[in-house]
Image 1 (cartoon, rainbow, N blue to C red):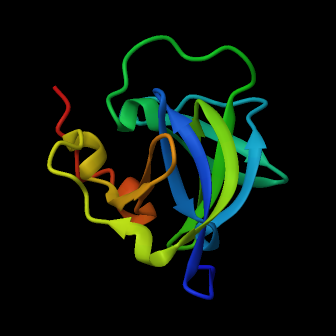
Image 2: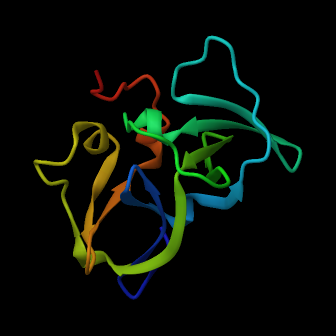
Length: 151
C-alpha cells in the first residue's frame, strides 16, 4: 500500500453508482477497453480476454461480480489493470474516478447493512464528505471460486 504519513492512496471507480477504491499499490494502469474476445463456457464474471500492449489480460465484469443490474453507462468501457499471482486482469467498471489520499485511521470495518455481494470482497469503508468509499480487496475480487451471494 502506498502509505505516506499515515495516509493511503486509492484509485477510485464506480460500479452501479457505488464508489469504490483499490489501493494504488495494486493498480498497474487504467485504460479504455478497445476490443475484447469472449471466452466460451467461462463464468459469467469473465467478460473475456483482451490484448493490452502485447499482454493477454482477463477482463472481469465488475457489474456481474457484484450483481449490479440495470443498463451499462454510455461511453467507452473502462478498466483498472491489476496483477494477481503473476497474471494480469482488467476490472471492467462503469467509470474511473480520481486518486484519493485518505487518512489510514479513517478506515472502518464493513457496516452490517453493506450489500452481501460487496461485503464479500470489501476490506472496509472510508467516509467521505458526501458518500462512502468501499475499499475492495483485490485477492477476494479475483477469487472466482468464492461466489457472491447473488441470486
